[in-house]
Length: 225
Image 1 (cartoon, rainbow, N blue to C red):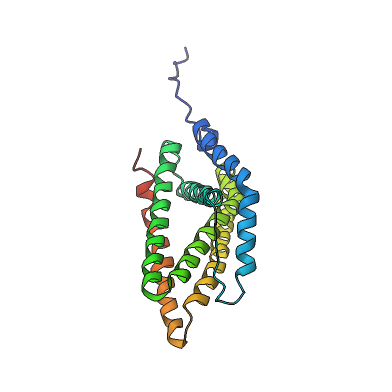
Image 2 (cartoon, rainbow, N blue to C red):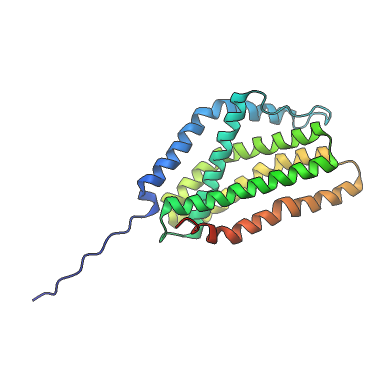
């Protein structure tokens, strides 16, 4: 006589979690509707990037444009969180709650960097220069979210190809920072000594926070679980 086998519940993966997919698709669809306006704002930014430093970036001018940039930032935070979630391999945790924790961490990173930008701008730049720097940060970060969509979804649905898509996401993130660095250098470069200060800034407001996020991602992925 064959012994009875105890049935086991099949654990669904994150790629088949309906709540997670609904949230991701909702963010993607709303961002896609805002894409034409975001493209126009980004196009104006890149046109002004190499102009005279006296022509400050105007950035988003109306409430509608500010909302579009905010949607772009939300998409960036969501897909940055998804990339970190997939890279952590936190399959044993509730996907939507784990993702929420990592997105919270990415949001804290953005808030810390923005606060740092404002402090540095207040100390070393004029109000117009500081505003232009902040607008450049918002625009480049908003554009980054659109470019991260493909590697983020690919890491979710094709975990066996995670490493190449993780590298692609890292390249996209770095590429979106280059225009921001150019804007910053044009604003703050006033002499040879300012180059040294610029490298100190890169370490303090760019590299250190990224290392902190990577080290804290595991803890934040379980904060709501």
